[in-house]
Structures are given as C-alpha cells and as structure tokens.
Length: 332
Image (cartoon, rainbow, N blue to C red):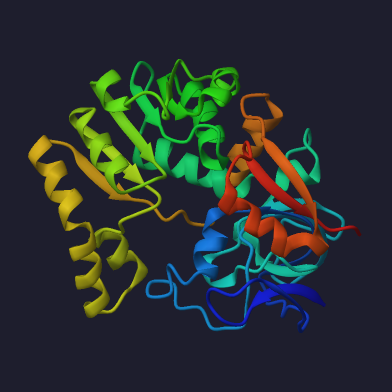
C-alpha cells in the first residue's frame, strides 16, 4: 500500500510501500479519497511535538480524511461498505497520507451530503478544533464578543462561521487582501495585522481563539474583559493538558514551566488561558455535518494537490497564502 512517511524528524516526506492496516473488531477500513493538510502535520515532521507526542518512526502523517468504507470489523454497527465517511483519526492512529486507513468507529461520521470528498476531507481537524474551542471550552453565547486570529486560515475560516452561528460579534485578524473574504465568512470587524495593532482597536472581549502564540497570545489576554478566556492551539501547553495526556512527572513539570508566564499574566489581568489540543469525535462530526448540509458552515478549500505531490503540498503550508485548507486527493 502506498503512503507518505517520515523516517527522521526534519526530513521531507518520502513515498513508501507499507503494510495494509490492521482492522480491529471496532474498526472501519476506509479507502482514502481526500486528506486535508494541517500545520500540525508539518510541526510533527519537524519534531516540534516529539516530547508530548512520542510517535515511533517511520510514521505516516495525515490527520484528516474523507473516503469510502471498504470493510468493517465484527463489532461495527453504524457503517457498511460503500458509505461515504470522514474523520480525524485518534492521535495515536493518525496516518491519512495513505491509500487506506483503519479508523475506530467512534471517530467516524457520514460525510456531509452537500459537499465533495475534497471539501469533506478539509474539515475534520479544523472543524473539531473550532467546535471544541467555541462550544465546549468557550461556551459562546449570543451577544458575546469573540476574536479569532488568522481568520483566512484553516481553523479561522471555520471558526468565524461557527462563532457567527452561535450569535457572537466576531472580530478577526487577516491581511488586507483577505478582508473581503473573511467578511463574507461572517466577520464583523477585520483587523489588518500588517497595518493595525489589534490591541489598540479591540477591548472587552469574552473569548480569543489564538493560533499564533508568543507575543500575539500575550496581547490577546489584554483585550479580554475580566473573566474572559484565551484559548491557544499553538501553545504553550498547560498543566491541564499534561495531566489529560498522561505525561510523566518530568514532562508535566516542563509543561508547567513553559506556560507559567502566560498563565501568570492571565491571572494578573483577571482572565484565563487554556491550551487546546483537539481530540477525535465522531459525535461532534455528525453535528458538524448537519451544519454543513444546512448551509451554516461551508468548507474552504484553497488548493488541491494530487496524492503523488503530497511532500510538496506539505511544504507549501510553510509559505502561507492559502485560503482555508489545502487538500490532497487520491484517485480510486
């Protein structure tokens, strides 16, 4: 079976012939027809998460898929061969840059009926991230004010639409060239990050979704109202994440130190900071499918690559400039 793997950190993806997936009793074997590309894939390739995500090499990357069910394990009840599905496999079972993958039934959902395989393949990681940030963690309510950084990107383009659906006033940062694009997605206020300082423009926000980190995150804390919350998806990880991930005591201490500055700043301002590393959830994807088919959410696919060009496609993420998501497609 063809796949694209890394054998050493910081090296490019390489094509490999790997063994067929092992299909467990509760697994679904899926023929991958589209796979979204995510910054997380490149961060793993570069070794950025190797302390907290101790993958064994060689490793097949890829966190998103849309495709067709080939076979199901004996305990699977909700799927059958021929079903069109999509998923973000569990963290310990990634590997969608391959022709086939076995996915746990609970991580799958039927893909939205109104979109293509490529569009469906763009959604799982970013849509689950937006849902878990805005609905689960943020509990966004009508009338609240939400800032979403990098609104033209993969997470941002979905998060703007979801926040607007939830009734929030939505601000976002984007380049001037993307201002019209993010307004069309639902942004009420657009900050041109190249020419404006969002900290000088915005105040009294209930929630910030930060995908940039560093100084951008620190400034985000300062535009929150008392009791407001910043959710970071680029880091730094916090102690709650370390506990949930089951990290050893040494790594837990290291994580606590990494996030101590931003957590201390948040406390002084009377706000809070949480790190979000999204998780797989078929249940949430089913709710997202409904929103897509109802016209509430629309996937944004900025570029489509052929499976043979997966290494170059992943490298293209570093240059930026792609609206929404880049996706690879695999001919049947």
